[in-house]
Image (tube, rainbow, N blue to C red):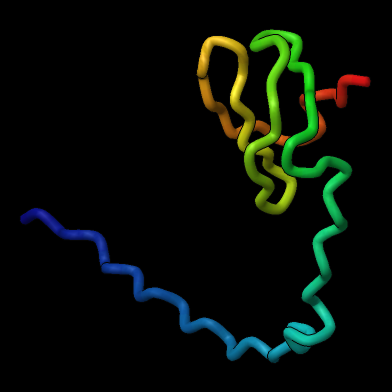
Length: 80
């Protein structure tokens, strides 16, 4: 006679106390970008480009050769 193992019953989870902070306290304002639309920038791989748009910490940049990329602003430097 083959005996099957008794099935384990899933443990019931204890109710979780709501320890989350209210949304008003946790939202932070994104810091203003160091760049502006129209700024000339340089990227080590893609070369020189121009900022076409800004969203949060990402810049939409058109590089020489008409290639457009979305790159985090800490990966480029402003040209003087």
